[in-house]
Length: 282
Image (cartoon, rainbow, N blue to C red; front, top):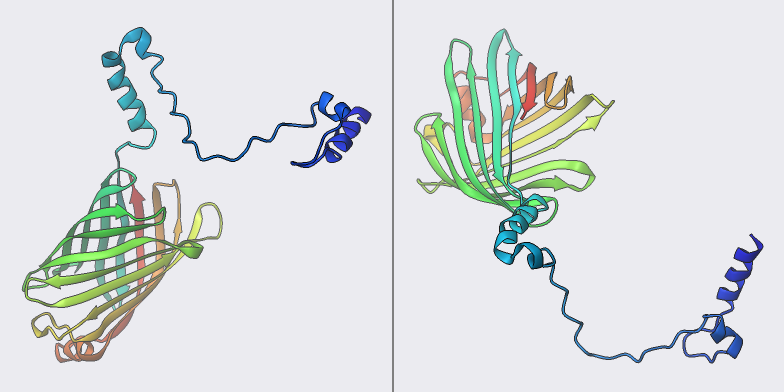
């Protein structure tokens, strides 16, 4: 202990750069020569080719490529069924499924989405299929662009889609997209959700979705401005990380001309539903 304290004291008392050293300090190794600053280029890196000298460069190239692929250049995939639920509202039962999958690496991915909604005994009301190219722009956000085709409702629409998706500060998952149809109709969607972990397995998730339109689209019962909004609160329990049943409540409202279209068709402009479903990924 005393030797350590003595060494620390001597180091603290060592002369700063540019000060002269006594012979004793120099003998004890407390003084180092200060090389003058220069602008010479750095030395070339040593190539990692030691194994080539034994096995040959041709034999080691595929091995080196495999190592590079396994350490940052790998290809991965995931399929997520984010929502698969039954909704109970005013004595009616409907269902909704939102799923997506992606394949690719850290920077570039192919993203495929499928959103469907309908009523039991009432057929399919809504079906959207989307394919996007996703490019990472930083560790948390991706720029995405591609095509979306609306199979339902009729008449069908095809859109060019561009937007952003990622993880905002404080761990909010957000996304926003612009869609331009082949008919020249400009629409936009945005959503945000947050996973509040009550325990390691019990998660409370608030979620907000908004839809907007730049013009009236009477054949689709859509008015200009804010079209609809949906706020949901779901409580899920992760039996396993890949499988979690949930229950919750969802409130949906249509606004402006869109609400007028709904009332003219004998529908309500807003409503609240209790939901029961499952979330899974693999």
